[in-house]
Image (cartoon, rainbow, N blue to C red):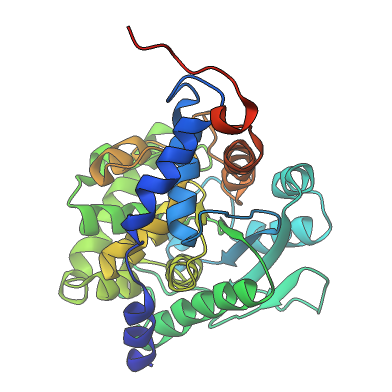
Length: 354
């Protein structure tokens, strides 16, 4: 399976920058002062380069919400019990979660992917079964996953992205559900980006000060216990991550391999994207960070990456909610690029030279 990972990474190429001048010239010829649509123009240009087409399309949109349980929940790092994970998966499958409302609003298809929930789901519309194990092991006492299991989860995520591309989706997005998953996400950020645990650990589902202090100590202990296994990005993913985070990393890699732009949700999804970036820096050309999470530490992570999330709405839910909203912004940017008149075509006088 390691060979499959290497083949996947080999398929990911940096975008063709030779298209940049022509795309920028088109944006500058639109009937507006140059640059007056700000980040919409930047987003459109990045989308053009990611797809490799000067006439890009964006009709079919999909978000995969990856779900898994975490052994570290036994340490009491979350305000909610682990059984909430399968309960929320059922809520999503029944159409009642925030992600359902926002994907319907944005015209985005949604799949809920069971990567490692500690529950046996019946076959249901919208559910994709890719369970590796019924939850990760407790990373505070040893590796969260074996490297073999982490790789299986990663490759499953990549496979889903490739399948979505073949099915005709033009843009993909990530979401997640898993009680206690801010804990592995924070540990991964600390190790992969060399960030102090204290400054990036947040309250997750709303824990109090005492539990926050405990959460920080659990994360530090997990990093210490798994130090020998965490010397590489993939080793850190296996030791400190989770099945949904591994799948998100693979999903991002698979999308990039297919030249499909991928919209990353919030704090937890971004940790999967960081793993993907560490495995293959060229992934950055295809990544859109959807929003700046209100979860403590996300701003620090984005600054460390030099990334500019599209939205800043104080969201901290996850599920893919920020990705769904941001897809509408990206779609708007593409409509500007494709549908707006040009000075040359509309016979509108351009700015006079003085």
